[in-house]
Image 1: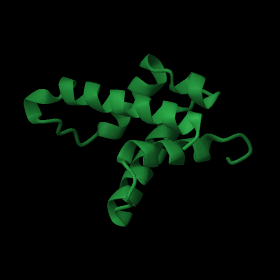
Image 2: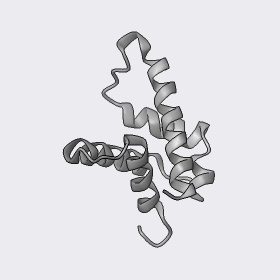
Image 3: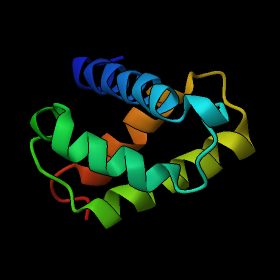
Image 4: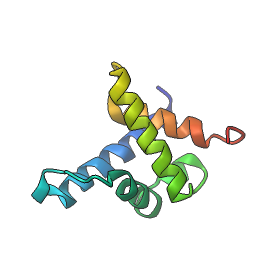
Length: 97
């Protein structure tokens, strides 16, 4: 796993822990979780620095939801944070859009 994936996976884990704390009264349940993550990741984390670009929130929501659906359907032998990190990096890589 490369350094960028490792760094982004750690950021995603931190967002997950924070989200669970914010929504602890409902055991982390949040139907609009991807919007919360996108906002937090863009405004309050090092995601833009790690990616080298500040994503548009709606596009990041799209990638997060797609990553979740893909991870749920495939059941890969990869932790969710690493899987999502790889998808986010691939999507926002210069020249890939």
